[in-house]
Image (cartoon, rainbow, N blue to C red; front, side):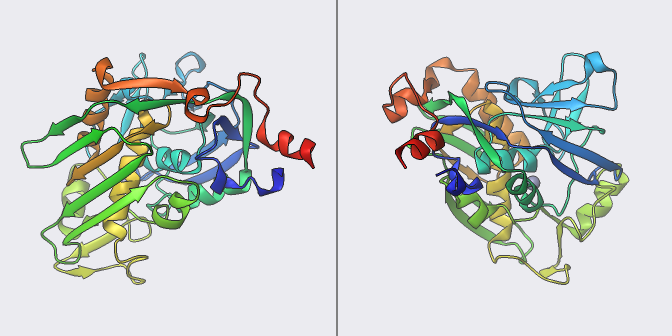
Length: 320
Ligand SMILES: [Zn+2]
């Protein structure tokens, strides 16, 4: 039943996926404020997520979205290839890929920063839905976390991974500004859950940070069109919030994106207090640096399927 395989149904099936056709997205970069053109293109199985910087020399263009190429950056997730070519603010894009169950894509982009769009993953979700996903004749690999891994920062923020059957992300935040305050959310990654619960949650900041960021040359493209801005207990965006827990849900979105830098879907429970990209990245790198803390399994083991696999939609068609 190929028609029923919508974007909502690619998370929990065992085969690798790619986009059916190019998905084009234009917009401004949050930090640079420059116009960015981006095209998400189909890629063969086991390509993973690769960025192709079309504004630099052909030999230097490829930047792989993997934790081993990720760097600490202020307020965003940045990756850098061996030639020093970087790409910033990829987290909402990575969250959308993980959210819809997209394993393989080549993303052509003419800037060092992904477009911020509306500050959430919603426009990406819609674009990927329009492009459609396609199942490839290769099984997925999964990372299974086999023992707890934890990181703590001096500021009191912490994050922990532990064994679980599905990906679950539990986030707690605590902000001085009463417009945000303390919020908790527990997210389980299933078919459709990203679109229903998380994708629309926008990034946010406090008004006083906007000035600090501008002085540091950051967030030059930031506006009420691509972030929730709060000031002394007030939300400055005209339409208010999209969801009363939009702040904490956005943090879940960021964690989901950063976890996808593992390079494959992961089965674990992540629990975190006051998360941020530096913390999530440190957590992922701590996990990957300890081979006794994880196992990589094929979908074969997880789903008990035979080696002579059949692509599910063709199987359904032949039974009709
Ligand atoms: Zn974010």
